Image (cartoon, rainbow, N blue to C red):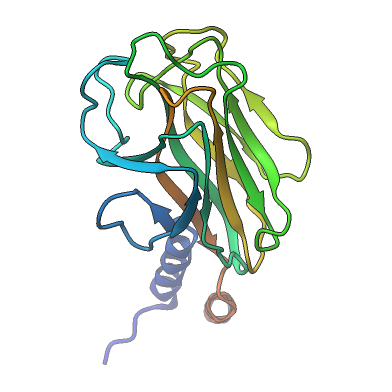
Length: 240
């Protein structure tokens, strides 16, 4: 049997290690009737509604859909929350949360989220005992944006310090400050990480819409893999 020179074997190991350093989805919730795996399950307060496709009737912005892709979740009451099942992030690095957010006027073309309305992303490192608010999106004088026409991003790295607040600079239909791409990066490595979203509106015709919740992470390098790479480099040096 022909034995490959060590340089090729080392390359194979390095390629394998590089592949393990790529981020992978560890949990997600797309709010579809058959959710994508690995599913991040959730519970709610308030009165959530799951709808899909184009919104019909009187609404704004025009051309809005209930979900960023397929089905999305909104609340038909003035306030509510979504609390996701706990995640074990020990042994993971670069744990990041991303989601999509829309703000719509329903049953009218003149409603939207106001200054007192908000959508808050909170993180608990201790299985829901203590939550730390990370990102808060405020409204502004009937501001509204769809998943398609909003292009603003709002996020920060996880910290236990005060919440970071984002808000449109004006009311009506928004684009660059229609905050649809939300994120919290560098989530802590804990055994019971809990993610929670809370919503508040002063009218049920002003809707926050949520979709495409994804948690990505990178597994820590396996000790055996690192040891094998080190041994191969040592053998390589001995042959030179």
